[in-house]
Length: 337
Picture 1 (cartoon, rainbow, N blue to C red):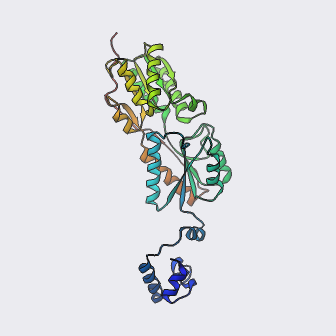
Picture 2 (picture 1 turned 90 degrees about the horizontal axis):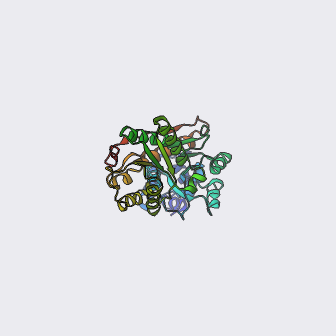
């Protein structure tokens, strides 16, 4: 159904229908009612492409996600769901686009193809070429995460350094003197993945402040890697009595590795970290952790992006979140040996 058919049935010109829909020129109340009656009868909806052309907007946001070849973590899926939900509340669509690996052309089409009004970018590196490309293109964007030099961009992030440091201090207060960091994968660390580097910074600062002995391990983002990591930790560093982690996807394997080694949590070994609430509550016993507020972060990213679209020259804004550590059952006093 199109404007021409509405005009024919209402007995008016196409331009009159267009004026009635857009409000650009006055139309008599009788004519407007006649046009509206036809629209209601036909259940007409303006064509999205035509509306975008008229408004100069697509009413679509781009969400750039990790490559499709990688299984998204629960936290990443939480970001996707929260962005889609917040966009829907604003009557906007979301175009998902992978980046990295073989997907650079997809990202470039989003940036240069005028398919979206703005972009939300996930999984930020300390030095991120995608951020530089968006700045060059002048397309409004917001990042979930932030680069090493974040002052010129809008972003939402979790303060991984502070939260991991708080976990270390909590374990030190329980008497633990030998603590490990179970970080993200070696590939992500080498690529400059922001959360992994900030977790390491917070860990190193806290163990230095408390005079602790420590070791830091990289771990792949899956259960088998978590199990292998625990085996390596127990073999190479038997003195370690506690660990902190930012690797939620490895938690099931970490749990299995401790169980296979006959290690009771928290009687023999304590563990804490930063994770989506789902992972923390599924761990056995439940994980003492800072629960990453994925819903709040995704919603805030959409709000910030809509602000940028409406006022591109307004000062940039940042949101750095430090959720409280939820004390659950995975941490306890240092074991007596």
